[in-house]
Image 1 (tube, rainbow, N blue to C red):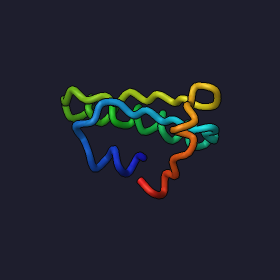
Image 2 (spheres, rainbow, N blue to C red; image 1 turned 90 degrees about the vertical axis):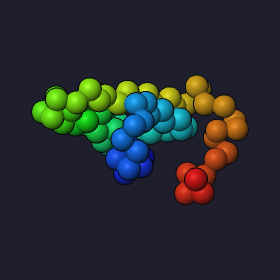
Image 3 (cartoon, rainbow, N blue to C red; image 1 turned 60 degrees about the vertical axis):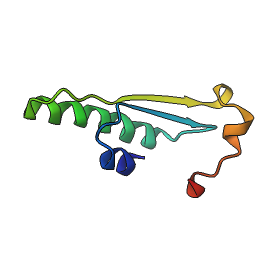
Length: 71
């Protein structure tokens, strides 16, 4: 996800929907969002990425059936 977001700098929101998201993955996503903001501050840009992580009961059965490797 982070690599994809890096390749699409115009994107402003990242929503991750999964049954379970490991804590290490959550930290990487939040660190990415903070890094984008820090780099924007350093270069004078107005860029921010909002990260939303939805897991467990918030996910529909349709989303649960998607294989990320196929996207």
